[in-house]
Image (cartoon, rainbow, N blue to C red; front, top):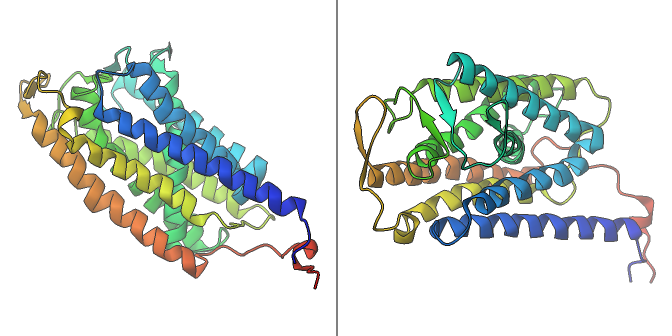
Amino acid sequence: MRRYNPLMRERDGSRTVLLALLLLYAAARVLDIFPTRMPTLLIVVLHVAPPALFAFLHGQRVYGTRGILVFMTLCLATGTFFESLSLRTGFPFGHYRFTGVMGPKLFELPVLLALAYIGVGYAAWMVATLIVGARAHATAGVLLVPCIAAVAMTAWDLAMDPVWTYIDHAWIWLDGGGYFGVPFSNYGGWLLTTWVFYQIFAVWLARQPRRVRMPQWNRLAVLMYAVVAAGNLLLAMPSAVPPGWPKTIVDAAGRRWFISDIVDACVLTSALLMGPLAAIAWIRVGSDAGFRRPAQPRSDAIRAG
């Protein structure tokens, strides 16, 4: 019989909280199917808050409190800087402005949008880390992981930006664009922005003496990214776009786009790009994927006969 171990109980409790946050986020994605029955701001909050809290709690176990705070600070600071810069100059994303859908704004930037970088940003980072399977101080860990993480994060925006713009009306592209009314520069901006904070974090992490560790929860972070992708697939449900809504939209450049094509592009991108990234990371979990497990606590090894 295993002796009582308060450390193991704490780990089990943390895992339960992470699962609860994952389920809460999954439930929020289901609410997308009923856009006219729930307050829009509530749906936005449930899309942003659970993944961000998940990132903090999971990141504590992997990188320590200081490490995850550094990660979150970089996400917030870099995302806020480039979003604010683009709102004023058009670089790097393009010219756009936010509506009131995402709630309160600070200097024209919705507070919830900045927080959105943390939750999905962390999930994309963990997916990339597991795919590459390199330790933090290795060359691949410093250079390759940030690039793949930026692609994983941008894939999310590639799937959802036309939806957020022309179905959810969260922001408006002032010049339209060639990708269902979204300018291609937007995706270059996402690659740049996310790569910057991932790269800075990778360099910082490589200089830390503390070993990165991943207890028993590798797949929970991958599952968060997978749920993000799976939630996008729900937009194919008929109720996600009510029958009374327009069948087409016209962007600021005068191009006409079918709403059904926007939804199809979202579904295909999620299934064919985000899905495989999550699947590869899930498979890589079993190979330890570059994480050294910490030494087993002495109390864990004590058994009573």
